[in-house]
Every structure is written in C-alpha cells, then in structure tokens.
Image 1 (tube, one colour):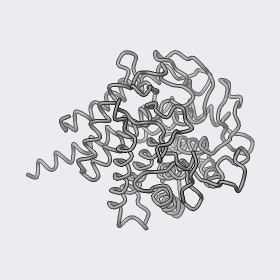
Image 2 (cartoon, one colour):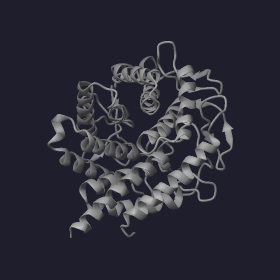
Image 3 (cartoon, rainbow, N blue to C red):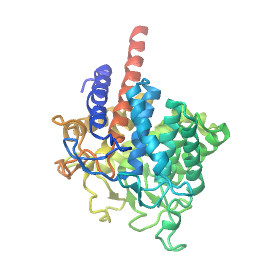
Image 4 (tube, rainbow, N blue to C red):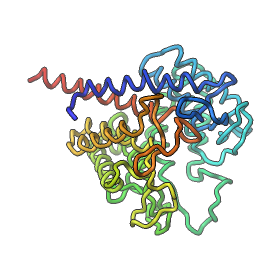
Length: 403
C-alpha cells in the first residue's frame, strides 16, 4: 500500500460521513425516545430493547462530532434525542445506571456494574459541551463520581464471586477510567485530572502489562493467577488500552510521566505489536477474540471469532503509533489489518460494517447492531483514523516544503 496519507484520510472520511453515520441516522432513531440498536443487515429493527451502553455511546458519538468536527444541528438533535430519554429513564433512585430498558424506558436489567455509568459520564460530558446545557453537565459529573466511588468494587452487590478466595481485578476498569477522565478534561478540577490519569496509567502499565502483553485479569497486587480468568488475553482490550495510553501521553501526560512520554508511547507500541504477533491468525488472517497465555483452551467458546471492534481499534492504535514514533513495524501491521478489515467487515451493498465473523472470515451474524454493537467503535475509529492521516499528511507536506 502506497503511503498516500491524504488518500487514506479521504477513505476514512467518506466512509464515516457518507456511509456509517447516515446508516444510523436513517435507521436507529426511535420516535418514542432513544435509539434502536438491534438492526439487521439492511437496517430493519429486529428488537426494541435499549441497552444503556449503546444508548450513551450514540449520544457521545454525535455530541463529539459536533464538538470536534462541526456543530451540525442534525447531529446535536440526535444527541439531544437520546440524552433527554436517558436522563428521564436511565438511572435508579440512587443514581446508578441500569444495563437495559424496554422501548418505553422501563428498566429491564439492574445496574450490575459501573460501565453504564462510565459511558453515561462520557456521553453527557460531550453533550453538555455541545449543547451548553447545565443539567447535562450535572448528569455527567454525577455519573463520573459514581465511577470513582465504585471503581474498586465495580459490580457491588451483583458480584457473584465468593469474597476472599480468589480476589482479582480487571483491565476494563482502569483503561476505561483513563479514557473517560481525558474525555472529561474540560469538566474536572486539575487535581482530579492529574490524580486519576497518573493512577490509571500506572496501574495499566505496571499491573496488567507483562512481557508486552496485557492480561485481562490480575490479582489486586498485580501478580498473576493460574486460572482461566488469570491466563486470559483479550487482544482487542489490550490494544485499545494501549492507544488510550498513547493518547494520554501525547495530550495530557501526568507530571510523573510527562518527561518520559516518548518512552511511554514506545512501550505502548511494543504492547500493540507484541499482541498482534501473539494473536494474529496465521492460517485465515484476522485477530483472535480471546486467547490463553499458556495456549490452553479458553472458557470462551467464541475465542476464535473475528470481531469488528477488535480490528477497528487496532487500526487506530497502529496509525497513532506510526504517527508518534515512525516505526516501520506499525505501518507493516497497519497494511495487513487494514486489508483484512476493509475486505471482511465493510458491507459495500447495504452500508456500515458487519460485527461478527467466524474464524475463516465469513459473516457469522447478519446484523449491523445488537446488544453489544451500536453506533460507536466503527464511527469512532473511522473518525480517529481520518484525523491521524490528516496529521500525517500535514507533517509530510511540511517536511517536503523544507527540503
């Protein structure tokens, strides 16, 4: 692949603005409030339940584009449509965010972990910034305080583990908290920002990263546990966490790592590259969903599936890593993952991207959205890759002018 950065920027821009966003704008808006996410290949609704993660992610997506791209009224209207629905129906009496609602907004599943709160804080922070609504700012801050309060016990009363026998913590909480905190930079006191970013970077890069691979679960002290959960590698999570860390290192490195941010970035790139070497399917191509660090069978029967979010987050990590370090290995892997992703996930007939492939790369579920896939990973990654390639093109142009 020729390194025509502007051509690649145009590819991602066109896919975002002319394909993926219009798909969700056309098919996902529920006139009764909120969004439909269970959409088949053509965009028809096959289930009307509303999952809080995906509702908030769509609010975030359209709000973020208003803030960072252009303040289009139709984007703000879509974000407000979801925000008003969730502000009314999304939380219990204590302010904890449910997992899912029925179409009308009645709760279906209890607030059994803090990830609904994480995405609520992200969504309402960006919506408050886009709309100037004070009530949205308050919703965002309340959700963020929930996350901070519950981060060490994310499932609370819904935790099924017997206490004290095999305590462990998961990568999901610090990686999401790191990204969320950077997202909410405009709303948070400087002291909170510094403190949380420093702690989350330290935890991800010290407790979970070992031999340039990120473990999904470790003991509270960061040591390894020889069990299904303790040996689990989730390549997509690990790679996504690494670009979160790179983003922090570039945009807002805590004081403790600011002087060494290039070292941190290179450590993250090493993590991305090593994960790809470990998790790339040498027979059929693509990135495995789950693996065991010792090569044992995983608990997850879907371990060899190829998922959309794993691949698009990898594209972001590789382009970002290449721009920040210029390392040739990033570009070599980018070409490989780009070709696989665009050839297997993008649906050129009906638009948007498929989510689930079998190991051979064949479409496994003929859908564009469901309980876990919504208007988030694909459009966010298209936007970020577009922006990364624009930066690379500008740097290239500046360098050529100076010669």
